[in-house]
Length: 102
Image 1: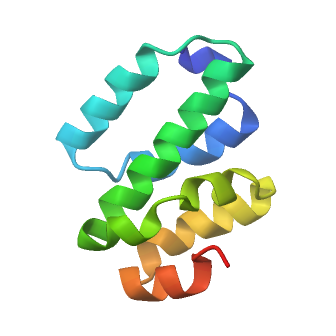
Image 2 (image 1 turned 135 degrees about the vertical axis):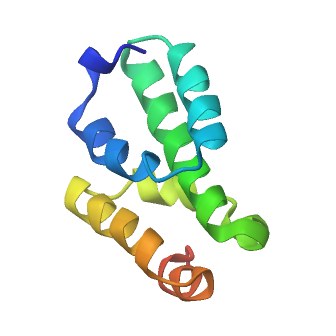
């Protein structure tokens, strides 16, 4: 995946990943670099980024977060941006209470 080929949705995801610890960010960027630049690759990139952000933020609660990425991917862009801002502002338990799939 080349960064010149970012979709609007991927652009929303760039800022939150900069808050990842350097090791995690490096791992994520290496994974993204291996993806194709087509629409399937962009969808995989979105999923990979969202899963990484959830796991990084929720720590030991990440098991409860399984499957959340798919529901996040279905959100409109504005709701996704709100979700990502809340991911860093709320305590993990609060975040799960608000965003756990029903």
